[in-house]
Length: 173
Image (cartoon, rainbow, N blue to C red; front, side):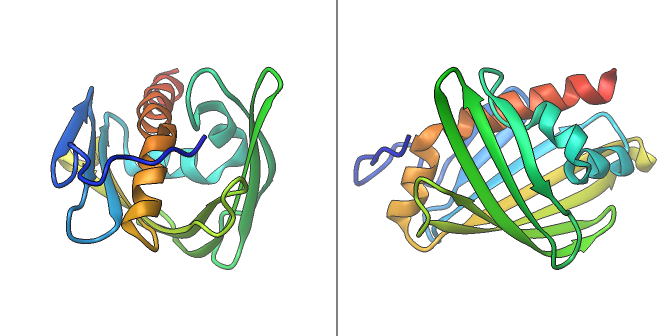
């Protein structure tokens, strides 16, 4: 699942647009910034990130299913989830450090296949157009550029883009 990228990735320092999802790989700091707008109010988008039954329906690529082993999205809480496709299985876990309803989630993110590669993530929810729309900005910071590049090469873009498409479909239903 984890691959190494060339020393000078062609995407470094550039924004890549995939539908309405913008993924920016920073050239100065080992982080990835993802920006996505939704045609739904903050409370709906935030709830879809905190309710485990909803998260299971949209997170990750379409080819994977989610099992939410634990999802306690509150300050001091934690999570464990498993994604599956056929005989393949990918487990993830982390802690929720700060949860401010409708505004902010600060969490760690760890892929069990690379347990030393912990990301610190900040999700900011911003109300747009008089409250009818939402901008979500997620920043994922890792320890090194090598870890960042492995994170990107490991299918992150597909998972993020398809996951947000699935979230749109869920919120539209």
